[in-house]
Amino acid sequence: SAPDRYVVIGNPVAHSKSPEIHAWFARETGQNIRYDRLLAPVDGFRAAVREFIAAGGRGANVTVPFKLEAHALSDELSARARAAGAVNTLRFEDGRILGDNTDGVGLVNDIVCNAGIPLSGRRILLLGAGGAARGVILPILAQAPAQLRVANRTAGKAEDLAREFDAEGPVSGSGYEVLESAFDIVINATSASLGDALPPIPPAVFAPGAFAYDMMYGREATVFMRFAAEHGASVRDGLGMLVEQAAESFALWRGVRPHTAELLADLRTRL
Ligand code: NDP
Image (tube, rainbow, N blue to C red; front, side, top):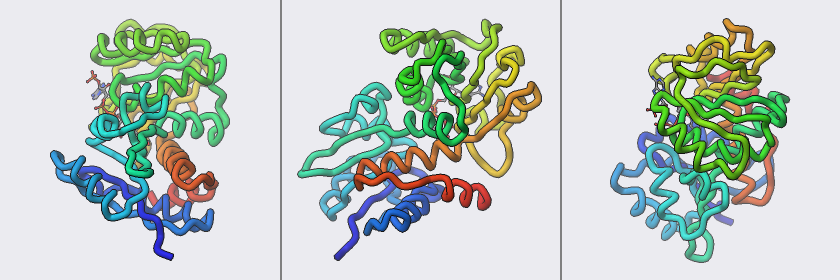
């Protein structure tokens, strides 16, 4: 029979590794799916989704710059998509659009399961207060950290986020200048690495034996990863987060969770 169809919708989208990742998952789990890239005009997200649904599409991943629009377009939202205020996974079912967000759980799975670093009881520093940071706050707090500090260049945005998630756990917000205490885990959710920039954090934020995570990934270590390593932290990039969020989307669509370790190792060699 014809494969069930999925896409990743974005602009740009040519660089996306999602088709490769989902094709690998489909082989591994024996699922008959087809997964393509769909380039939507910046003002044409809704039309692209409607067209894909009309053509029989079953689900979609959503990437830059459409995650907020996907949130607005969803008829129904998961709790984590509602908290994130953004949607990276759509499921089309009986004429309805269901929105989910798997980025946060992808990050947590990569740190806790793949890297073997528990978040529970730890002091965690999250750099950035944009979409990526917002999406991971609830899944991090669900791990019961001792403390979560959100720090951002525009301090007010970090303070607002902390206030918003106040009821969910021990979270606070600030700018970078006031950071002086040490953290066990430092997560870079800024886009600074894209421009080879480093958020202005003092080296003292890295506790002895600290773990540093950059959501960015690439062939080379980012400037944040190099800075963290120079100050004694063990480091990891965001490739595992990418693979884990994809696995969660796949599980949501297909009801079967693919294994990720072998794929992650393979992707790593081809970066
Ligand atoms: P946003 O544009 O929503 O937010 C950008 C954030 O970065 C803001 O907090 C901004 O601070 C900060 N920032 C930008 N430039 C600098 C700088 N030079 N110095 C200090 N802070 C800076 O982006 P997103 O949150 O959507 O994405 C952030 C990153 O996360 C991206 O690099 C993206 O690729 C990555 N990501 C990775 C994923 C994965 O699967 N591995 C999944 C999702 C995202 P301010 O508010 O002051 O402007």
